[in-house]
Image (cartoon, rainbow, N blue to C red; front, side, top):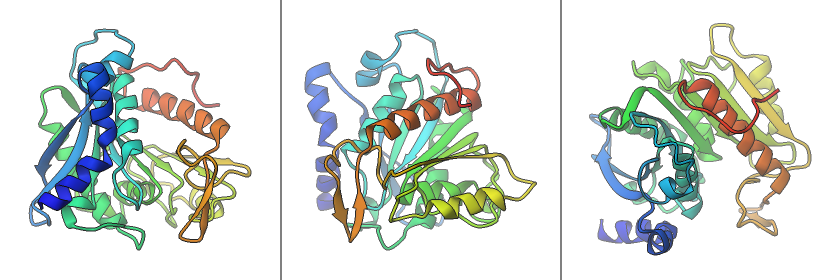
Amino acid sequence: MRIALRIFLLAIGFASFFGAATGRAGELIEFPNLPKQTPAHLRGYLARPDTGLSAILGSRSNRAGPYPAVVVLHGCGGISSHSAKIADQLGSWEYVALTVDSLGPRGIASGCGGRSLDQAFDAYAALHYLSQLDFVDPARVAVLGQSMGGSAVLYAVDRDLGAQYFEERFRAAIAYYPNCVPEASMTAPTLVLIGEADEWNQAEQCREMVKHARADGATIALTVYPGVHHAFDVAELTPGMRSLGRWVEYDEPAARDAEQKLRAFLAANLAGTSADEPAEK
């Protein structure tokens, strides 16, 4: 357990770096897993609008809580400085954000063989935890994930997959470059962002998901970026590289457009928030 915690702390060393410069970024937390699930506790990185780096980067509107929230699910490489940065960015937009570590507490170094079901259940554990916090509005919680985490987002909100086991509902879902599911029936409005040249997950599969989505489900908005690869929003992937034989590469125009769409989508679906960016056309 001590080794796993040490790895976790190193993975988000980004937080300590900014903490030295600004006082404090987010905080490392431990929270209960769902009943009868293992491990008994999960870990995460929690950012909130009124403290630390998020407060410094934010709009300084001084709007009092409770705040809407976003559960963040990482890719198959595990939690990282990129995951923490997403949480801090969401915090600066006046959302509470909880990035969940789905691998460390299980003693797993890589989830690239597929852990989407574990992550989908972890998302509900995080939703339950956030709902108990007095500064979070439990009726306004979204879930966001990338790659494996994006796939887990779709599992979590599909009524025939993860959602069938829970009464609680996410208000919105955002999946960056996921492995899309067939015949989807989403329990929350869903935004999918993927590159046409993605070698990990196929954009065409996402088109098929939208085309054959069931009428009883919530809307699915899909954006496919021509010529763009997997992990297009990870700035550290400049230049691109091969990971497990597949190309990953940052693309600034796609990343910026996806960020605008994400911010507008959250503002539209988590009532009581606002966005500086125009809504998606």
